[in-house]
Image 1 (cartoon, rainbow, N blue to C red):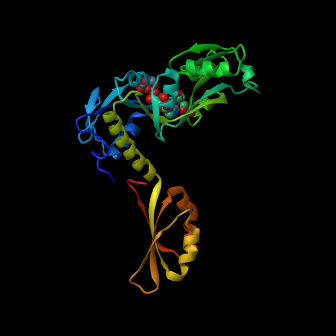
Image 2: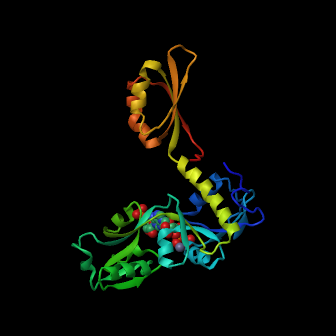
Image 3: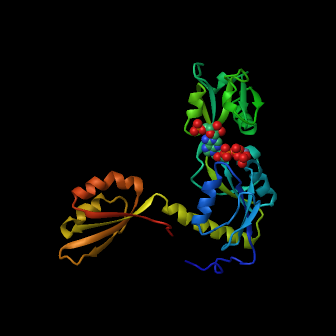
Length: 296
Ligand code: PRT
Ligand code: ZN
């Protein structure tokens, strides 16, 4: 691993990252930063907090304000839902998808209503907090519908006769079900993204690179397990045949004659699929350990 200075990181400079102050993205964002070695000691009321051991300060904002704050350069980078970035049409660069905050922006209608295509929305009234994204979608499909902007409780709009359809965030879909709605169009698949100002100085870009390098290491290790097992030497080929896509697992002799130890890295989901076959092939004493960081 190269030293920070070699990667051009000037330790006097710092970057300001906008993070949602409370709400769904706050916890995962702060956890990801902490796992990347960026610890911010804050009481909930602080607007701006410096990291103790990395040239970063965190600016806590409502998610609605994050895209523009980054586009304007008041913050150098930010973590926000892709949905919010698109809605605000802010001129910021997407640096990295972060793999949490997953959801979709969808059109839903009362479940008993027939629906065959987006043309069925012609002349209808659609309630949403995302008018910009909805307008673009309708324009692309040549559909004229009335967009009714509301900021909260969009899902009750059809039930109270405010609109014929809604356009809102869907995650598990249970909010739609409990409001007798069904999803008919998925317009945007969203997740939390790291965004950056487009005009960062070389010094700030170097710090951002270091941050991305750390995020990559943390995210690469997520859901990965370090797996160790013992087996008689003659079972080795059968075990290696079961291990998926591993170029070169580590194989070490054990003190006990004719036995070896096999070490490898596996996706957790994959591990559960192959555990039975590993045992059938002769593996014993299987240990599964978490991996904290992975530098690829
Ligand atoms: O206060 P602030 O303005 O910062 O926060 P906010 O209230 O505007 O946003 P918040 O904290 O609710 O969500 C922040 C971001 O999380 C969103 O912009 C999305 O990118 C992402 N996200 C992920 C979600 C959901 N999942 C989600 N399920 N945002 C909202 N929901 C809501 C949705 O509005 C609907 O009411 O959950 C309901 C649907 O969930 P299901 O599981 O019933 O389908
Ligand atoms: Zn918001």
